[in-house]
Amino acid sequence: MPKSQKVDREAALRAAGLAFMECGYSGMSTRDLEKRSGITKFTLQTKYGGKKALFLMTLDLYLDELLPWIDNSVSQGGIADFFRMRADDTRMPEQGRFGCLLVNALTEFGATDPDISTRTHRYFQALRSAFKSELLKSKNEGTLDMYVDIDLEAERLLVSMIGLNVAIRTHGSNSAAADMAQGIAQSVQ
Image 1 (cartoon, rainbow, N blue to C red):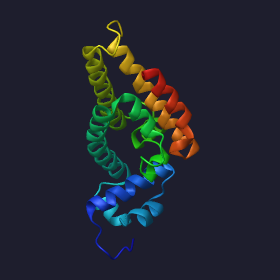
Image 2: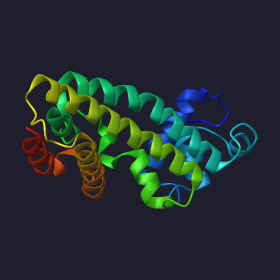
Image 3: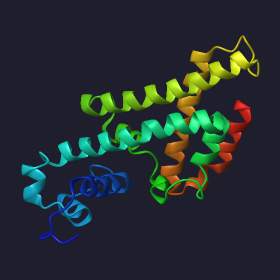
Image 4: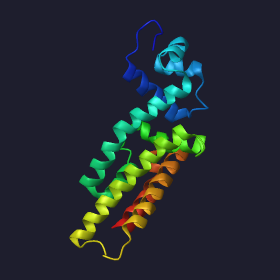
């Protein structure tokens, strides 16, 4: 993006988010961030508060879009299909091959950064909630054994989704984790 052109804030955040997703926070230099987002170094400091503040803004935008999608996807297609979809190149956007921006941030920063931890906690809670809701629905319909511990099962599914995202990032392809996703989906069914 040319520097002289004013860059739309949301478009700049999306471009920066994709750059961070692909390269990580540490792997993204300010110069590369300028090239990929159109945000000048001066604007990065004065309008966005620096690289870390911009990164947190990209995480917030990502969360704002991801959380409703999770709820809708799990409630509409079920848990098994949610896992299959995550590892399907035809059903996931191209940038999905870089994994999940939140999981990537957590693995890069660890749990010691409170700004990152707050956001990843929000993501994990949304996944747990979507899984619990669907499991409870299945239990009430009689398609899930009444003795299944919903909290424990939701936690297992959460950890499975994190692992799936790490595998996808490692291989750089959604479909590289298709067997793993299929195995999780079969155990859910």
